[in-house]
Image 1: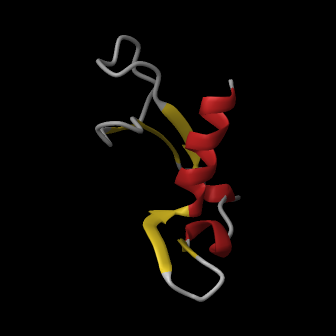
Image 2 (image 1 turned 30 degrees about the vertical axis):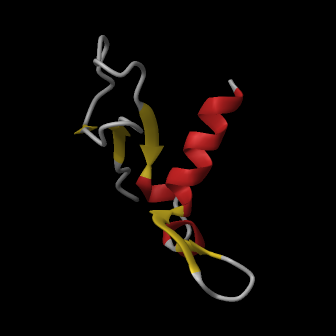
Length: 70
């Protein structure tokens, strides 16, 4: 049986919680299931020339972008 690792993260202050926190000062936190992340999603983003764009892992960038679309 695979153990699921689910956590909640505030994209503004980066507070981390094990459960969804209602009334967090920056609004709704983003839910992550770390057990489903691929090795590629754990890597930072690089540009076409191989230069580091951001140290943030791709899973975080994808989650923030998805949150902005909703």
